[in-house]
Length: 403
Image: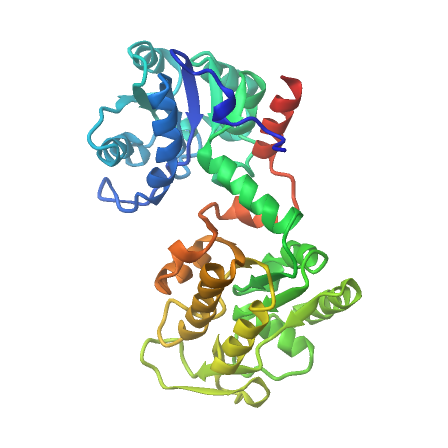
């Protein structure tokens, strides 16, 4: 049973619906260069519009820090959204509160939509200011949050609105919460986690939480070097947090007590420089020369991980296993990603992945569509995996409890 309401619980016909989306999109020369977040919001937009809602879209873009910056205007996003909707008109308001916003909202008919200007042009948004939340709430009758990627922020449009209007989760928010909940809180076991990235210092909370939840934790990327070093393996010139050795050993001991098997690379692809086309070789992690860097897991490690994943029913993945942006150091991550995708398709394994680099690595391996769910939420996805309470989710749950 969901602890939050969804749009299926709402009567939206003829109602003004404030829809919090995340249209913090990459831009170049005033044009949107990646519409992924627009595409993911379409199911909620189309469902509410089809039921006669008067949609008022709220979003931030960049970090204007409470100042109006023309280069961070959402106007180009309104044009991109209209195009993604097959040319449907999308009104644009020059502000998200005040007269400009009111005029745009009042002009809406049933099923029509407007995008309001960047929320972060007002300092009250990031400050979670109650007066700013009140001003936003005055524009609507119902609040829907479809921006899981902003759910870890206690901002006015994320937490404040949920306490002022009848509130529910949009389709994307619902999908994120249901998939992540199934993956970590009620998984089919054995449960495995793949964690990569550069430094364990940035993922201490994640590692500490996962070793108490999963049966197997595979560690790759630069952070694997820190663990290898902590266990007495020389890693040459590799990226390594030598000052985190004791912390790494503590994590290993916590995992042992919890019955979690930590899997580290047994072989690695090494090179003198991180450059495309540079001379590289595959060697045992116990034979890394002093002047070489570990830049990817080796094929034996990738094959071992594939075999271990075949024993699992659920997988959560955050972080690439090597320097995947630079070939040939993408081979390890791609091989494991393809194995996980195959197990998802053919063996029914539930696979949930997230984080910006992770999404890019899976896209490079051409497996994005094969995973059970891939989150584009970034920081919110990471904090969820860390076991933290997300303010935006808590606000929706509180709204459901109080209704």
